[in-house]
Length: 100
Image (cartoon, rainbow, N blue to C red):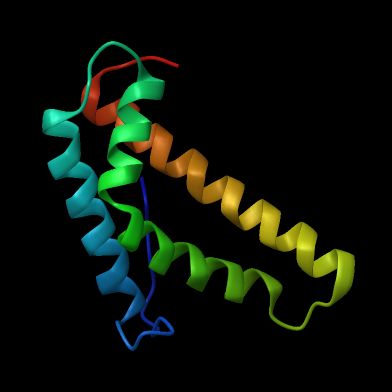
């Protein structure tokens, strides 16, 4: 599941609150998400929760790239985003019962 720690996002929202809001949005969206495929459910919920996803993503990218430059920073950014995307999809799958 999507998880967090106690730090601030760039917008002044504590990171754990941003993660909690993302979890709540995913939970809310899962109730009305399409049930024809996991892909459809993920697309619908990501659309609904875009602002919450962006806050968590931005913090995770900042943490992952701290002190890195160039290709190392880009690779760390990519890994952080892919990990969050995977967590989101797995959370949606668990909440909807849909399989990949």
